[in-house]
Length: 91
Image 1: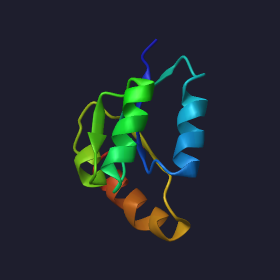
Image 2: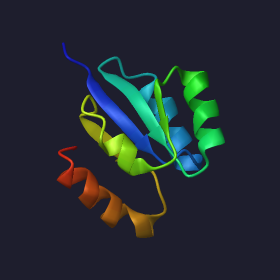
Image 3: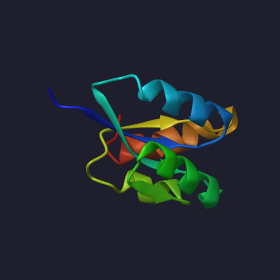
Image 4: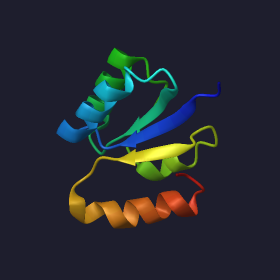
């Protein structure tokens, strides 16, 4: 079975909660995280073995291997970031 390859945008409280949930999903692999706080994103990626870390979510969207993104940002940012993800061919 092919794993769904996910990128998580936002590593705050909700992002961390989602990342912890992904650990229990055998059919999902988190390939990347993006957050303006790159040091925090890098810390989380190192803890969870996530290979890609970005401070700009647009770099995450450019990773061809990523099938879907999980937008874990403030509600006011969901629409523009999600629309960009759709335009980049991500679910």
